[in-house]
Image (cartoon, rainbow, N blue to C red; front, side, top):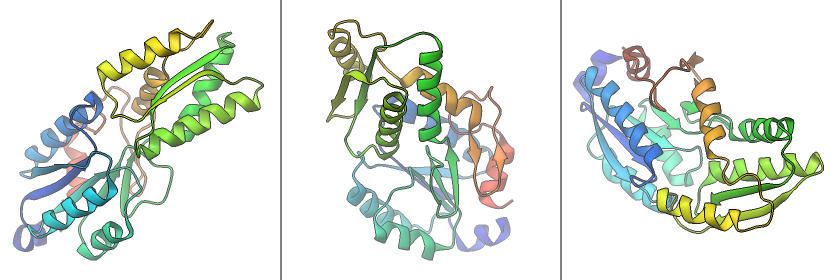
Length: 235
């Protein structure tokens, strides 16, 4: 496949991420860039701001450059975006979530399972009053994580005394503000679910189609291993 890519496609890879403000995605982009460049490919990056229509427009523009592959965040897209990717006959990786059926490959973790394990862990540690800081601006994976956490707590006889949800992109200042809101509620014992959620990802990241598993010691959300790039690009 590598030979055919060299003749019929560019050495560019379309990368569409929701944000550069969120440090998670900046780390993801760093990992993607390092791996692709070692395989002589280069990312062309578009920022969607969690807007599916913008993602569609950016992808349509990028496809005119005949990219060798595409990387997109999450498993939710417009119907047109999905059709474009299926018709392109290139490797497609959807990152951040594996709780669904990918177009081609997906890399990430199961947000529902992670949230359920988070609830079990906190209850096992003796916590009984819970707060949550999160964002609801088309963050599909985050929304699934929140819903699963709340459902698990309620099933076990607890709830969220401070379910603070914000219509803004997640970032450090927003997190500090949200945490202060959560702590202002009496006896709240958890201010944010984020640290445990990321730990679940680092330990259980997989490529669902090819059934590759990344090591827990990986320093970024996308594997730094050159072998991953070879699998992804068909070497």
